[in-house]
Length: 271
DNA sequence: CGCCAGGCCTGCACGC
DNA sequence: TGCGTGCAGGCCTGGC
Image (cartoon, rainbow, N blue to C red; front, side):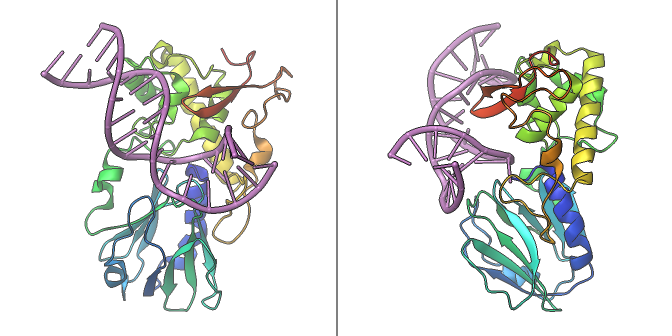
């Protein structure tokens, strides 16, 4: 489900609920996520106060003073704010119970998500240490994209989905950004010159900013922490629009497979 | 029934 | 020998 805009929307929704709140308990109902949820989690969290809520790529970082709770939503994960009396249903694997009685609940049917604990610097965690620059930061620009693609013959779409190149871009936003930049998804990354790398970096940033403004994209199960659905799917130019008219030139949008993932593009606008 | 889905790690065969 | 690369597979459930 969630790519950077959905995780960022979740972060913004949870921030006012969590920051400054004491944690009364952590309830783990099912520890078999992509990695086992640590056994000592309740002990780590108990009595600590949430200091801040940050995001790195698709990871949420909940700073609890004594350490950081790292949450990843995988494909089908969702964090929502519920009343303490709300009964947990199937796939509600994890609860953060606040002193006020409010509960932040993780639901994840497919269990590709993660709940981890990092005592020290969360960015030093092995899963986060090698992630590329944040696409909305100044660090990420055409020059960076140009530099890291020089000896990569892989298709550019594949490269954009590589978290070591840029953080947080998944299948939807890779497709949408390539359309905005007018670049064919199968273009060998090393064949993009400086100016097209600049265009692409700009397109990635704009696409993500627009999506965040729309509250992310809701395909089936994504909702923000407050239960609101995202609206960016109504602005998709190419994603999941095979056979429909390109919004720019009316040519029929095509769908191909790249590394077991669906790619959508306009054969006329993207070269 | 088979196939597909927003992620991402691992392992393998291959070519330079 | 050692790499980057391009795949396939695995982890899961649910919907069509």
